[in-house]
Image 1 (cartoon, helix red, strand yellow):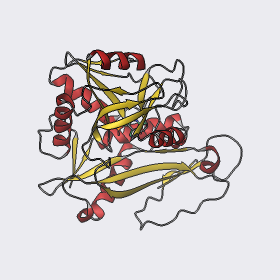
Image 2 (cartoon, rainbow, N blue to C red; image 1 turned 45 degrees about the vertical axis):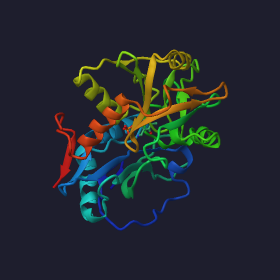
Image 3 (cartoon, protein in one colour; image 1 turned 90 degrees about the vertical axis):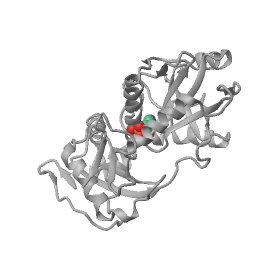
Image 4 (cartoon, rainbow, N blue to C red; image 1 turned 30 degrees about the vertical axis):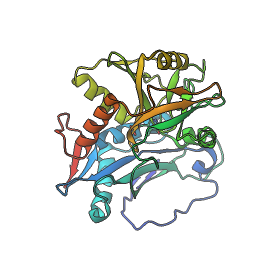
Length: 322
Ligand code: PMP
């Protein structure tokens, strides 16, 4: 579906996947005016297809659009696009562990070279079937603490899901992989001390009193939908969840003293992945014995159960496609 300044949203169509033609001066190619989302469609055991909180993706897409000086796509249009694409052929949505990953995105197509918001955009949605996110399956992940790169600074675009944030994190992610790690951990830009998030996931800490700690939505991290679901579920079952800053030194000290029992990462792709070890140029931190802990396992089981229609959906998070 296209947007132009004079006509607004128009020309929605469903078509076979094919290359997109762009003018070489299209704004997205020069100034990176682009945003996206990621969500999954699950093939439930009763044969229905379900999405997890797609309204939240629609809302975050609007927030990203606002930050990137782009027009907001109405939530109903976003949701209709997702429904229609999924319904084309539900037979290729994997059952069991797999799912259909949906990628809505929007970019600036107007051809001009001045630096200003574009007056033309294209919103598209593509999909591909996916299996388990990490090659190691359910094994705890090892993360790399980068001391060279930061992801986002105050006043920047850290809370938006825009391509530029990921472009600037690629080198850090490559560094993580060179060091044998699955993901990179970013610290804040100002003091280089506070844990923010991983390359593509939010992070939680499980303390010895059973409480959870997760970095606050300071404007520099992505407001994860999985993060929000975990906070809601944990509070519902009586756990204390503190959205507060947690420093890398505290992480090191709490892991050494045993106050920190578990750490896990969360996001649409991996849902919940326990963090067994953090590697850095200043030495490694192993959390407990490096295996997946009981709190992480329980939270993961509950969330995956809801997403797959096996656990009661008391918050109305599961959107079934009819
Ligand atoms: N942080 C970043 C940088 C991400 O790319 C993602 C994945 N969208 C997340 C956190 C987790 O967000 P969500 O739970 O909405 O997938």
